[in-house]
Length: 93
Image (cartoon, rainbow, N blue to C red; front, side):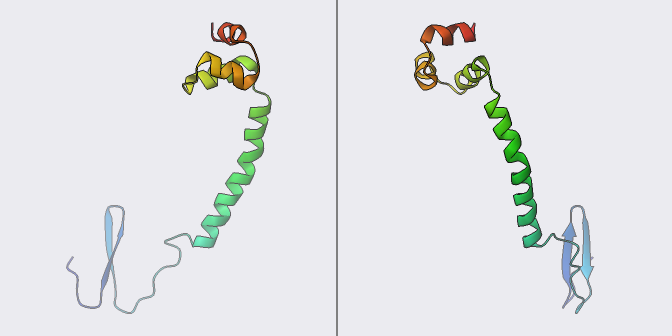
């Protein structure tokens, strides 16, 4: 399909469609910006309580393992959690 004067090619993945000159764009082809923003806010509002519950119910060994997997030293974990280094070492064992 060649591009004629006054026609604009549209691409949707592997298909290419040339819209006739003067034809209005299809509003259903893209999600409008306000709807995307609303969707993002809705997802954040729904996930925030879940993340807070997961954080609040995290046990000491789980938190020690998470911080250690982030590259923290045993001493840094102990200082941060206000527990002894021995307790951190036992949680990692």
